[in-house]
Image 1 (cartoon, chains in turn orange, yellow):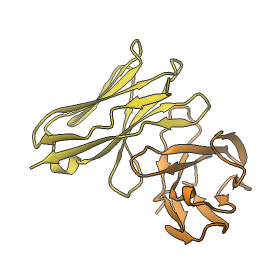
Image 2 (cartoon, rainbow over the protein chains, first blue to last red):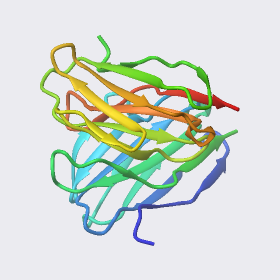
Image 3 (cartoon, each protein chain N blue to C red):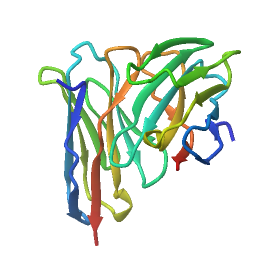
Length: 114
Length: 109
């Protein structure tokens, strides 16, 4: 399977704990995106990488969120000191360099903060 | 004004009906537009890219109106399997793609 893969699929954590999610994009794609989606809403942009460079970060992203893509391949998204409001589906997507390229999404990581 | 606005619906239509969704956007410099389909608790999947001349794929037709800054999706001869949430996607003010909130479609037998 050469699609976008995310791990884990589900994560349940207690408030205040740190969590880390991983995304492996389609291998020939150099752009990688993280989105967050809550029930009844469309995906909300969090951050975007081109190769290893983090080029955009949403103003909605608090300091508790950090993302990395150290070698321009897989990416991790860490949430520190989780809050109940962080409960959502975290979606990773990748695309090729072309400006008209669509996003290809992984299955997502569903986070529940109790 | 929001970067993208989409009628949330829900749209409940009988099988065989024709249904259309619109999505307005604010960034007049936007070049790339897409429609995605999302099934319940699944990831969004690309349905169609939207080209300036409009494009058709079977029962689905996508159109772009730059003057009025909206894109549309037309579904003809609706099937039960078309029931899903349809998301429009436009380039945001930064280099990300911005999603609408989605329009929920239910096709009834």
